[in-house]
Image (cartoon, rainbow, N blue to C red; front, side, top):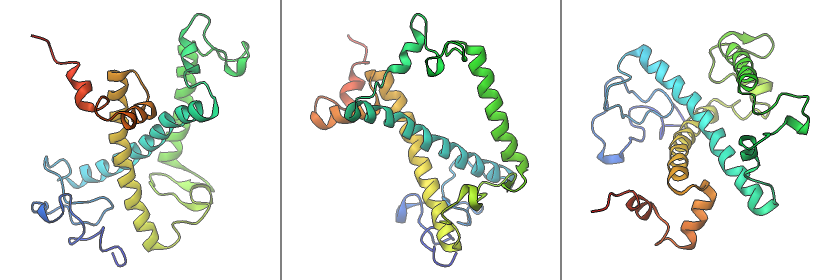
Length: 219
């Protein structure tokens, strides 16, 4: 792709740079994020390739939102006085009411919350598959237009191709980050920001190796 030779085509960047093995024949560098790596051959079938590519983009977008959602409450608590653990009150006696109004859906009502989530997700997935007149067509990972690209960032084809690569790279990083957040929370009982600040304060005492040794069985 002219203007993006670094990220596309058979001569594009590979997963281990100059030390990469020969890429499978079906990984031609045509799609964003194709770095020539598929050791297990999961995308050898064209249909599987298309499906896996779409799933990676969608999961990457969710992970980006999730990572932001994990970090933002801690930032607000540390520097702006917000109560990071206010949601924990939902599991206490009496729980929480939405907007503090007991006449609204009670936050401890799992059935009501689940039903609301199902309805909202059905609407989103319905649009994703079938599209919506005047908004966008279905089965399009990049609908664009005034609703999904109001700033026109992807109007230029070369820029659009580069943005696709940036999105998938950041999505992969976010998915790895979310996994790290989960493991850290299980091991330390703390959020990602607090873990980071603890490590920066004392890297020797607060790191993955020290935490891992706590789970080693004793003699």
